Image (tube, rainbow, N blue to C red; front, top):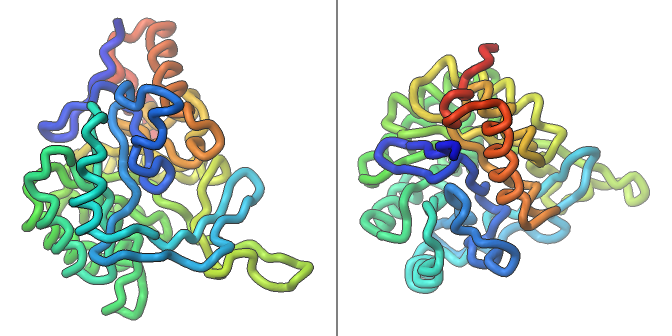
Amino acid sequence: MVNTKVKIKNLEFKNPVITASGTFGYGIEFLDFFDVNKLGGITLKAVTPEARFGNPTPRIAETSSGMLNAIGLANQGIDYFLTKIIPSLKPLKTNIIANIAGKTDEDYSLIADKLNGIPEIHAIEVNISCPNVKEGGIAFGQNPVSAASVLKKVRNKYHGVMIAKLSPNVTDITEFARIAENEGADAISLVNTFKGISIDIWNMKPVLSNKTGGLSGPAIKPIALRMVAECAKAVSIPIIGMGGIMTWEDAVEFILVGASLVSIGTANLINPAASLEIKTGIEKYLEGKGFSSVNEIRSKIQI
């Protein structure tokens, strides 16, 4: 048997395949399709301090080899999450990662504090791609000072495994990877979606009501791979690679350039069992190549 176990700090994943926030709900919705517990972990949809309706529709648009979304972090807030969602996670016997988001440093700090000691939550993913309202709306993850500030405050509040989810909409992704490591992140996940726009030429206006949205899917994979490869050389903490992973072959590419785990996003919206199929494919690949551990192929290729 191939050993597919991977660790982030003291948290062990049974295999390197997890799901990306916003594409897998709270995990329990997928139990009708396959045994979610076979995955290394799942990342829940984002939670904010207050309930959010999200952006007006339309907020999803198909593009060439991908999709744009501007959901707007729709959720029912941290208090609802704690009282209603957490109990519903009992059937899940895999690692559960809570994705946290907000408009200010204080928003992130509040949620991180409330998630401390919740046994059903094994790690948090700090989404620093959100607009910082105190800094004129620029994303936390696009400003080195803001990124460092919010991660420091979350680290001071949260005592478990902290993952920083980085924005790719920057000049040098390694700068922000280093900031995350310096501020105590136990891992980084990259990349989040790329900012894009789609135009309805017949009505002569943007397709999305929000005008811009985040581009995901196969179109972004080559750029995401490059960014993972660069960050693998820049930091020593584990990397969760994501961005256009649709097949097990895609996932292996990310591991080869330095990802410890891979996160499946848009593929879940097309094939609900994609994550499980990718997990199985990675295992068969390792067996076929004669590797005894997934760690043997990580960073096999230096870019």
